[in-house]
Image (cartoon, rainbow, N blue to C red; front, side, top):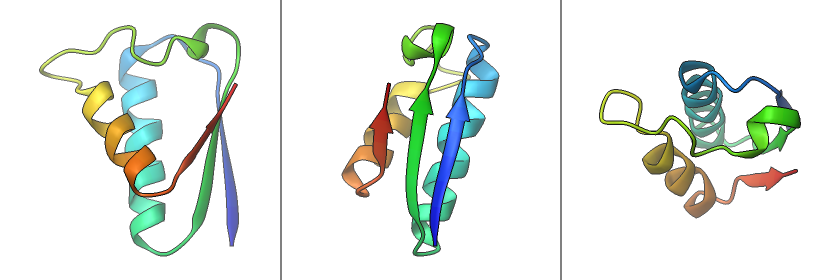
Length: 69
């Protein structure tokens, strides 16, 4: 199944959870695209030790997930 996640929040926790959801779905064999809209285009803003957005985004890309903006 093809899944599209639309992300438009600048909140780091929401961005982190969206990418984690994308990784979970990729591990289940789904085709996933995350569309970054508005303030979410700066995906890595808010990356921290508690919310490792960059690490999740790297895993997402290496797992053949697609990011679109």
